[in-house]
Length: 132
Image 1 (cartoon, one colour):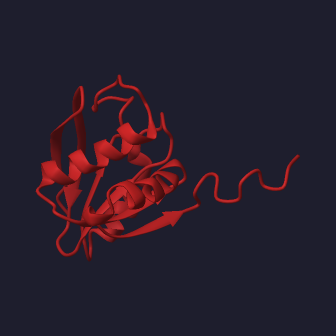
Image 2: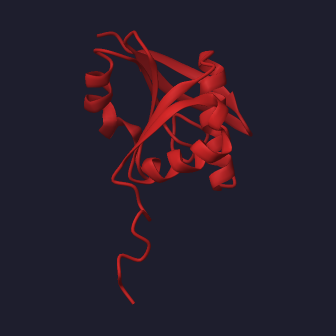
Image 3: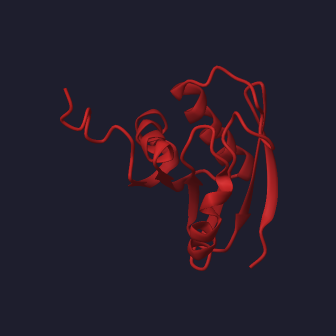
């Protein structure tokens, strides 16, 4: 299946990623921050068999902008910038680890742009995990 690269404008730079497949729109958010988004490639390509799926490198690593405030608000704004840049009014979000935590924040801050969220192994889901 063909992957089509994209670059969209974002606050103080640009966000780059790729999109593949056809069907309902899904935006996959990788873990990290500071991790490369390519570890999700196999999972994203599986989804692309039934969905129009995009994924992108979060701010902080090339090929996306490498600087910023690195706040939750900025990360959510980058998600909205990707949706805007792809011309997607709404989409499902799927996030893993840090990305899974981030989709919860996007669900609150950008609810009107989301069809739903799937959070896989989010950080912070169990507070301190019972540790003192």
